[in-house]
Amino acid sequence: MENLKQAAAVEAAKFVKDSMVLGLGTGSTAAYFVDEVARLMTEEGLSITAVTTSFETASQAEKLGIPLKSIDEVDHVDLTVDGADEVDAELNGIKGGGGALLMEKVVACYSRDYIWIVDDSKPCKQLGAFKLPVEVVTYGAEQLFRIFEERGYKPSWRMRGDERLLTDMKNLIIDLDLGVIKEPEKLADELKSMCGVVEHGLFINMVKKVIVASSEGIKILE
Ligand code: 5RP
Image (cartoon, rainbow, N blue to C red):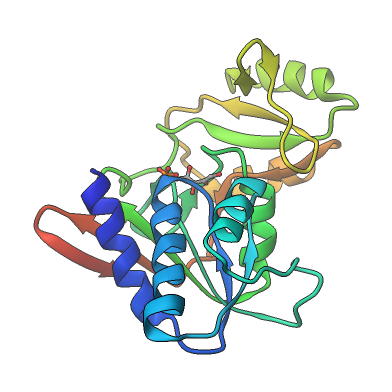
């Protein structure tokens, strides 16, 4: 599995060019891409500036000597490469397994190009087997939780140890156990319209390419 994640990351690095502003995703697969970017800088002399999608990725990139800027300090992002938790045939997906969906979505929204790197366990027919993360402000979060219960969305709090996880943006995450999401766009609109919801993990019509690594090799979905 680790080899596949790395293979997808190495393939994505082929789209990196000198002087790019890169968006660096979050998670175990994206971490291989961050390593690869550092390698391109040190071994191939590429000059890169990066924007990160979590404190965790920022810490990895800093240790590797990748120059970082915040999303507010750059006038554009050329390319963002990130992992995903599920991806369907329309290249819609679920993200946020690592709790970074808000920053991931913001960076992706302001990127000219956007690629996901996944191993072959991530493609699926219909989204929803992976619990859908919803990032909510702390104030009124219990009200949202109750509404999700009433709607049959089987909510659970994202925990870290015995405590509710606070995201990098100081919000909470409620994971929805939906089984199958028949109408992702409708659900995305519904969640976005709820008071206190900051963002959800449905990424619809956002990604341009998905690099899938399997034991048979690399496949690029677009
Ligand atoms: C973090 C994410 C990750 O990209 C997603 O969870 C995939 O992670 P991994 O590559 O470790 O399977 O959305 O919020």
